[in-house]
Length: 126
Image (cartoon, rainbow, N blue to C red; front, side, top):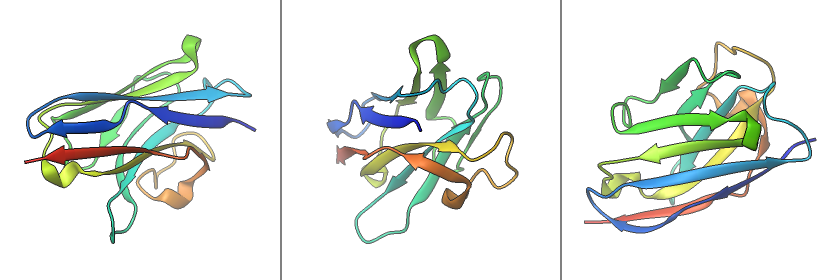
């Protein structure tokens, strides 16, 4: 069982950048595809992006494409979410997760993932 812990959230202004980290423990993440999701108050959990085991392939939601970048350092057992040009609508709790299997076609669905972190709050003021 892998345990995930997100960090790096905070309060920023529109246009700022922020980097989130997802640190894993208990097991190596090198064999897992991983994803980032977010949930704003009163809204459904939303796919942000995902990265394959080696980090070669990434996919993003249209709402963050070109502004957010996912990367991973398997040696540090950590995945990252670099966010730039932040907007107030990016305000949410951001969570990371490991996928149940490799190269899932439905990588944008939260049901594809099983291990979840507790999340970190990102608040973007206008």
